[in-house]
Length: 254
Ligand SMILES: [Zn+2]
Image (tube, rainbow, N blue to C red; front, side, top):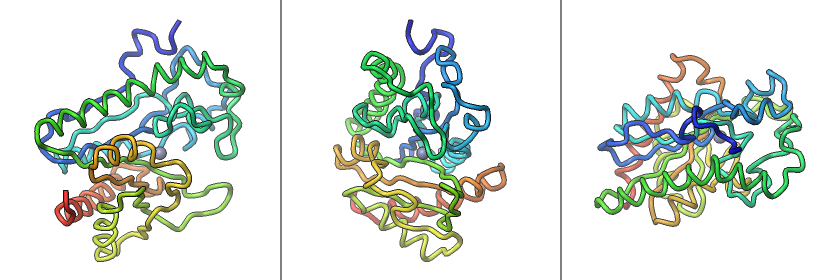
């Protein structure tokens, strides 16, 4: 039996597929839903509701931005605890045995067959659908801008984080530079380069796989999740990020 049942459907969701804007929004950690076949992975309700299972608020903000930017949004419908779509299959972090302070019993000692089954069920459809979307836009003469959307916990290993918005990049910093310039001019949030994570943490997999490999402008956005707990906060942050992208994209050479 596979990881996903027929009723659970396609693991990858696409919204606003015929968007006219240049941006493709990607949300790898949109959902905390676990496939029924995997039960609870041995985790408590508390752990399964926490940031280790998903990026709270990230999908809601992405949807608002898809509207304001007229952008296509692609996201993973299942929890990153099963497969973290921002990691390649060979990375231990793709199916973490431990996430922050929580052990993940259902991920302990997975054998090759179990790892392959998860990769085939969640990662390959995600990678292939995004890749096809990007290639189609390039073929239409509309090279897209890849923007991955994440949220992070305000307290990590017991330490509070001051950074509110992270603008992350790998080898291509064009869009991040332009957005950080716009953020400095705006001044509303504590926005920082490659914080609270950076390329050394392995978080730029999607950017490399789909942005850098195709020479496309790209950026990863991290929002501290206490800012986007409710709809009012989500609207404010989505408006702010829409502004940074609207100012940043025309400022770079594409
Ligand atoms: Zn994330």
